[in-house]
Image (cartoon, rainbow, N blue to C red; front, side, top):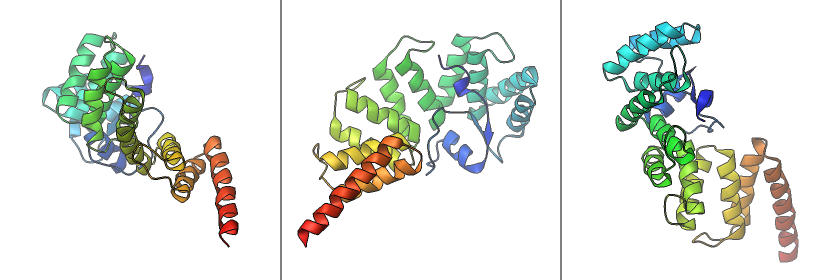
Length: 238
């Protein structure tokens, strides 16, 4: 289930950029969280503060009021509270409705979460094609987690025809956005070549290094392996 992995809240300009659909060049988190603006709607900020203080009933009411006035962040947060049953009895039908409102208002994080709901079959019948549609909307706004999800779909042929070339495009975008998994996979594409990607061990090693720096042990081994291979090639060239 989506559950508390998608619950509230983190403050900060970069976090708000991701939630709002503004491209942010930051590492994707393993699990998405709701975000709050540093200078957004006052009522939404009050709701965030109440939520963080544990005043769930007050936060729920305030998010609902701001959501009714078209604040898409409030719509998203209100949806999460309804889906998770925070401050009220869980109400998946109403939660889905408000989540879709935020997604249709072009909030990239809401689009990603709505897509993931369909990809995982949480609260709805699983529909990879519908998931693909929402992942694409979010990815086109630079949402790193959506870029990774889209790449995985293209690689697996899930919700869209299998297309390794398109998978590479989106893995690379997610890698450039700081996603560790995407960095490793992008390194693999460059290491192996094919599907429109020219083999380049130096570039592959750079992506493996980026993933290794974030703690990926497999990427660290790959970096060491390619470093040895490139060193041997250099010696042979002499």
